[in-house]
Image 1 (tube, helix red, strand yellow):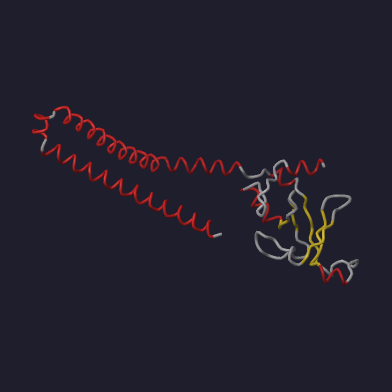
Image 2 (cartoon, helix red, strand yellow; image 1 turned 30 degrees about the vertical axis):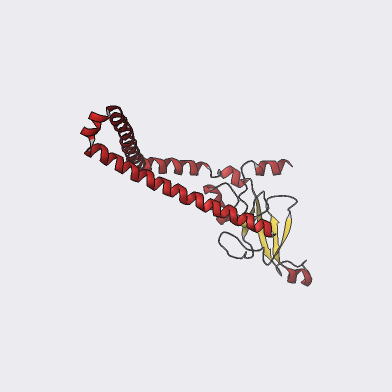
Length: 211
């Protein structure tokens, strides 16, 4: 354990030292560039007479540095100006792509619809079940309707955060989550995914019906 702690501390120390040395190297390089630029500008005539090759080599390197800095500044300004000018077009494209993610009316109508019945509204419910469950959701539009019992915690819409009232229409997604029809229909027109698990309903409803 002590060896691991020592190794970790030493690695952290060397990492910090490397960062400090890199920062110091950058600052010294910048300072040396300024000094060299000053020497070339002030003592250029003497350098041309005594060492013309070194002088022109310094001029070439300084010209490359100045060109690189000017190029980066120009590129940054061009990118910023392009983003500002094209921002409305980018927003329009993103909005159009977002609209394509919504479900069609046919896909929504294929989802199962249920009617919620609270406890005590049906005569065949025992008092024991009534105390355990908040109600039942019965499938609509079928000869053999499917019925699900809902607990008090589950008998609520996660979109509007309201509990289910007796007689309200619910819609169940292929993932098994259920919501108010009005709430989930508005959601699915904007995004064809479940608000809770993010599972897509496009194609999933058809697969569930085939099964």
